[in-house]
Image 1 (tube, rainbow, N blue to C red):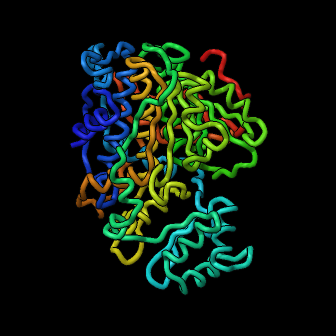
Image 2: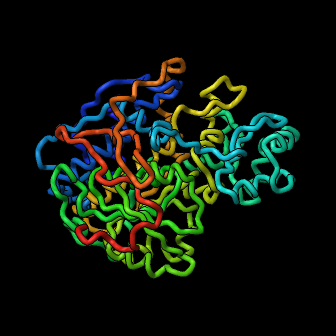
Image 3: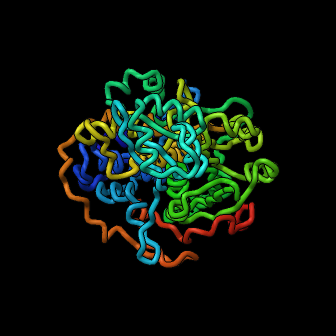
Length: 474
């Protein structure tokens, strides 16, 4: 099943992937959802796409097709492998991450599930302004604690609280059943969208055979010379850029001092990257200069937010013809919830996953931030597919993924008898690296091409440690 899913993912993004040898099978993680299959398919498809890009002699079958047929790879048959257990554990990477042996605590005090008068609501309060929005929506004074929030939620319906928090600019999701979600207007809007949208942008584009700012450095670092701007936070976007870094891409993460972060996660997702700071409120030209020399821009702001600042896909393509723009959202770019803030735990609640993964009486989240990690790997797949299509067809490209669309894909994969399986063995999948933060223990990236595994060659940097410039050697 997993190998078939990988082929389908390749076809969906317009490329013919080399065959992937899948090692292992579900169940791997304790869930009724086939998370190991999901993880191996998304990570395996990325590995296969990177193997295709490493060949560097893709061509499009243009006879009678206008270049729209899948890119064919003509460099032989690479041995591409993905291990289901390794991929599943990689989807839990933040859970196994240690700094000098200490695990991170990623949840703020008020973040969590609360019983309402008719069900459950999840509040996401990891950022202070989201916490304050939730407190205001509940009619509570600043500084209210978890018990205060619990009492306030108990007297109101879940959807009433959800709507109030969203109106205040916060993040919340009522627990819905699968049937309730499928009947929701946002679910219907998502139904017509591809899992990974890859489309050519209008206007002047890159030239045929455009390999970017540099040539790949061989199979060990197959994305060497590919410059990636990472404009993302928590978790899907950083995972996408981190995955590209594992294959040798030059990833420059752009943050800003005034934007909140989750301290542990910003470190755990930064392996292999450099980090700079640009305040778009006053330094937009610095970002434009980086875009002019980039190959891929990954962003996870709410749909339309960067476009309003002059950094929409068409703007980026005008700055750098041949650019690949990757947009990641919570609920997709269409429908009534298109502009809604969201995180993995909220999408699990809204889409019926937290309902079905437990007993239906109280929410039971997946044993991994699987929507985040799955969307991250799918975003990276889309980026590499667009790079391949740029080589074959020219042009600038737009990639779109969302957590909610990934949730629909997971739903389509069916169910397994995995609720009671133990957590998988992880010791052989961990490595350590010295860093400015101490000795880090982390999950190594999954996949292999001709026996060579992806890897990160540098530890997570401190935020803003590097200048807003590309590395001289990239």
